[in-house]
Structure formats: structure tokens, C-alpha cells
Length: 119
Image 1 (tube, one colour):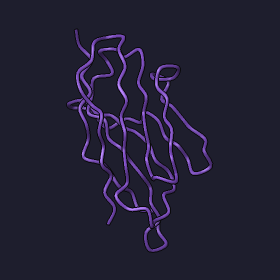
Image 2 (cartoon, rainbow, N blue to C red):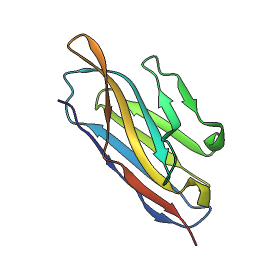
Image 3 (spheres, rainbow, N blue to C red):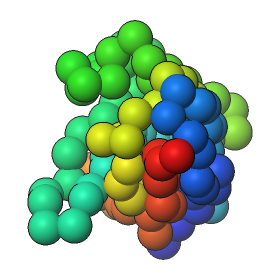
């Protein structure tokens, strides 16, 4: 089994920055894609950014130019640098990964970390 452990959430003022990190508990599996989703009460989880296995990165339109995601395949870590934060970025942020387990791509989720943007 693989666990995704997130860190870095918290409270920040509008216009501020936060950096989230996600680390996979094992490095003997092939991680295909890694990404970030966020969820607010009553809403579905929404994609924030995904880093594909070929290195390409896709961002939600709402975060383009403000958020940057990067992946270190040697350490099985994923980060999300969030700048120019807005109150509407307030959400629980989840790390997501598709990992090859037993020849199949299996989806894993982190436990979530709260990001609150408020003055």
C-alpha cells in the first residue's frame, strides 16, 4: 500500500503565499501522474494541477499564473507553490497520484490539508 502525506497548509492573508508538499510513502512503485485537487464544503473535488509522467503540467484556469507545481521523481514528492492567494482559494487541498500496482494504475489520495485565505 502507498500513502500520500501532505504538509504545508495553513492560514494566510489575501495576496500571500503558501507551499504545499506531498510525499509518497514508498518509492518502489511506478508513479504515473501526481496532482493536486481542492474541495470546498458541498462541492466536488476540483483539479488544481497535475504533473504527468512525461513532465507536462496542466493547471486549472483559475490558478494559472499564480500556482506552480513541480515533481521530484527521485524522491517521489510533489509540491504546489501558491502565490497571490485569494479568498476563493480557501479549500481542503488533496494530493492525488496514479501508481502502477500489480500492473494496474491505481488511484491514491492524501488525507488533505486545509488552506484558508482570509484577512
